[in-house]
Length: 424
Image (tube, rainbow, N blue to C red; front, side):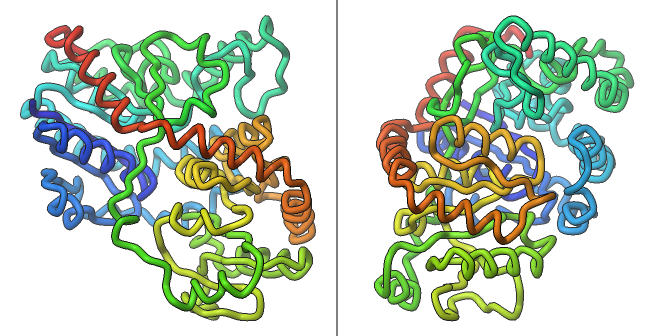
C-alpha cells in the first residue's frame, strides 16, 4: 500500500513521523514523507537510510525560530499561536497545499500532523482518507479537566469552558485558517479547534496512555496509540568516555535542558542552570547552548554536552529539568526519571501539570518568572523525596510495555479497512 505522510514544524515535530514512517515501511508499505521544517533541518539522509521517499517543502523556510522564540515567550497563548502561524505557516500555505495535493494523488491514504488543514482539504477534494496525529491532547475536550490555564470547575462546569475555548479559537483563527478552503469553493468545518485541524475518521493521540487521563470522555475518533519514539539514532550513539568517567565520579546527576527554546536565550538559560546547581549543591549534566561551555567538557560538578539521543543518557540521571515538550516528557518518564518542568507555553505547562498530577514532578516553574533559587528548591525537593523516583520507575515499567508505532499501525490499518473510499 502507498501511504503519504506530511508534517510541519521543528525537529520535535518531524521525529515522531520518522518513527511512524519507518514502522509503516517495515510493515511492507511504500511511504513518502513530506516535511516543512521551520528550523531548516533536512532529513534526506536518514530517510535514504530507512528507504523512505522524502521531500522537503519548501527547501528553505525563511523563518528565524530562535528570534521568534526570543520575541514571543512572554505572549499569551492565543497571540503566540497566531504570531507563529502568521510568520511560519501562512506564508508557505500555498506550497504546503500544492505538496499535499500531489501527496494525496500518489497515495492510497494520507497522514498529517493535526494542524495540516491543507492536507485535509486535499484529501477531501480527491476523496481519499485523511488521518491526523496529535502530539498533545490538551485541546481534546473532557469534562474531567478544564482547558489548560483555566481553573478546574468540576465535571458539570468544565464543558462550558471547552465551548468558550472553541468560540475563542474561532474568533482568533477561523478567518485565516479557512481562507484556503473558501478559495477552493469548499465549506470549511464549523469549529477550528475540534474539527478543522483534526481528522474525524481517526485522530491518533501520540501520547502514552499513562498521560491520557479523562480519555474515556473523548469522541471515538480520538484514539491513543502511544508515543511515536524514533530510536534509530539511539542505536548508533554511545556515551563518550569523558561522560562515562563523569558518571563514575559520584551520585547520579540532574540533567538540564530547555530544548529548542534554550538556543534563543543561551546565556540566560546557562546562567539559570549553573546558579541553581550551585545553590542545590548537586551534580549536573547540562546541554550546552553557550560557546563558553564547550560540549564534552567538565567544570567541577557539571558536565556539558551537545546534541544526543535522550533516553540512553537519561537512564543514568536522578532527575531531568526540561521545558515540558512532549518528547522530553516521554523520554524522561520512560527512563524512570522524575521531571522538573520550566514551561514557556501552554502546551508545555499542560505536560508539566500532568506530570505533577501523576506525582512525577513538582509544580511547574514558568519560564516567565523562574529564578535560580526556585529551580534549586525544586531540585532539592525532587531529590530528597524518594517517592518521585519510585513513581517514575513504576511509570517507566508501565511505558516499556507500550509500542506507540505498532499500535498506530494497527489503528491505521483497521480504520482504513472501514473507511477506504469514503473520503476525509
